[in-house]
Length: 479
Image (cartoon, rainbow, N blue to C red; front, side, top):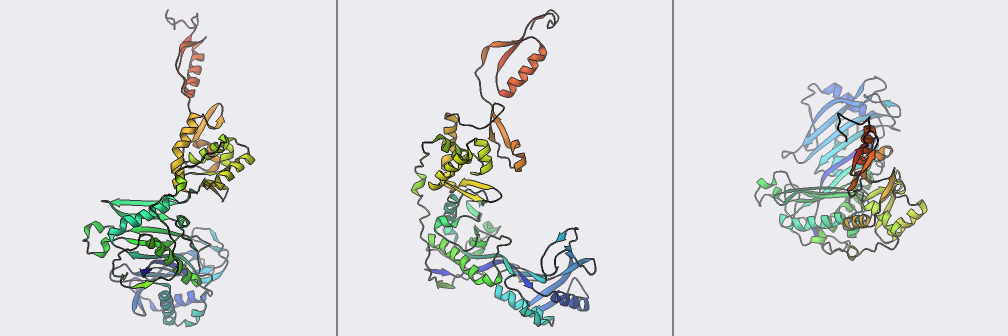
């Protein structure tokens, strides 16, 4: 298969320089050479950068004042390609912040925080090395710890013709339908005159499309905001398909893994394009559709238009308790529940509940994951959507309820609250009783008001009569 070479769009990483002296070299240059703090520029390679500083968030333990951070910024004439470098000090454990908190960073170092568009990692190395040469600090080029320098953002994209947009978005919709119901997925869908301004899946399960990735990614098909004002020959009218790293602090790849990350991103992008190939690309100022190469690795096969047969028929089993366990999860707002909540609300014994959950797991309907507590969720969103209404009908027909409190049957209101306040989520299901023509007779108005209030809370409609006596007579009228 042949594909156009993707371009790196957003890229973010942090260089970990093991010595704090590089920060002080930056301080020394700024103190001795910068006279106009608003208009000072330095030339690094063929780019001219603006240099300025401002107080940072850490307190310098020597001066007891906020340590300054130094910013080096550049952007091209179009404003799309840009890079920002922030040089900041880490003073080690016990460092105070300007908000009064204590930072527990375990090391002393200089960090260069990098954020850019349309600039790859090798160019950042060239720029940082040029900065070190400019400061007369070339010795620090060997002090970059590549294992502690991490990549927290990286995106690769191609621009394709808008006539393929329906097929591309249909692939993403099919993946979204097959994504599990753990509850941490996110969908952004913006339509403008029938065209997608944005269709974004946040960290979906690509394995449903037979795509196995090394890291977690998100994907989106999107356009520039004012695309409707542009002619069809304008490249910015056409959408981009972009895959990007899902940042996970503590698990992000290091800069030494850059090439494997780039390869993994491209494989995901080519796999998605392969499902709708052949596809027509559109060149712009940064993406060259003529740079086509042959991809020699195997790509997955998946018919995104064909729905799996599993959705056609789902066996609920013979055990009503198993159906009750499945119904409880299906009736949650996102098809995901805590096991401890299931245990409390269904009143099914723990060992039996696990047996039912494992039954549905073996059937490929449910799945579990251990986080702060065990989450039980639908493995595929499409299945959850298909069984939700039938299970509601089954529960209604067979009078299956959850968690009886004081004679009431409760359901989850769908309002998200902390676990300790979970009972506030519960709203009573009020039974409907047929009106009884015979009144309930009581001896006083106090008893009448109290009983009327209780019946109203229970949803029961009954007439209440007060027995006539000398205490209940009102101006010769008897009620």
